[in-house]
Image (cartoon, rainbow, N blue to C red; front, side):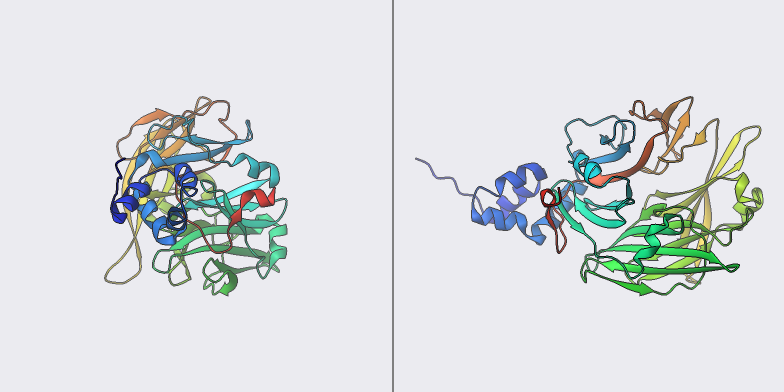
Length: 372
């Protein structure tokens, strides 16, 4: 009988390249493998491997017609049948789910009917319900409350931000609080400028920073602002949008604005004309190295004969638009158009997020089955 032996570092390297489903089965091989696969260090190594492996990536969308999640290929947007995220149980247990974002394989969700927040990893089926914030009563009125999901890579700290804007007695009052996975608690953060929210979740997450497009008032001609939360310093920045973009179409009711993640930078897309063609512009927000303030640069101008979809419009550096009853993806850089492989869901795709399979866990995670 021949005994085969491999160095431990080589075993770790091989295991780190395997899918999560296989690794969870391999935890039963021996105590040593179980401890290895369960360790945070191995989870980080496996995450690096997953990020560099496109077969571990997918776009997950919630199809309201079918009442389930669908996995799509991140490039072709065609359905991926062999990926089972196990999300369907979540819809039955938490009706009225809203998806805040996905980072490193973790998904942040809000349950409207249960007024709760939770994080979970669909690949490992580990789950954590977040403790209530300091002002839980504001969730009862989701029209003035919005959530963001972020990550501080230095401290390896996942954070959930809740912003509340209330208009009363002719004035706007805005406050915010943040939950930290490392501390497992909420704390209020300072807000230097009041504004009105437009969505119950952040518009886009860029490099772990959630971003919102907000208004400086309740009037139809109120100017737009961009609010972003720095997960490292826990500072909520609020900056005006490009004046040149606002000057093209002076009122927000005539112009549709959308946020997008373009090559790791926040970009603002706006429809600046509707006749004779719909003309769009994309502006990139950057930090000025001299003044330290945000500066805007126009990156693209393009014409389309279709409207932006209200749901899918910022996936994999592409817009998703509705054209004659079907969804199409549009690359603002290459001008390439492709059909999105979703049937019978043209108007009922409620959310979409880029997903990377991982073993990432946080303090307080439990098997999802305990909540069913």
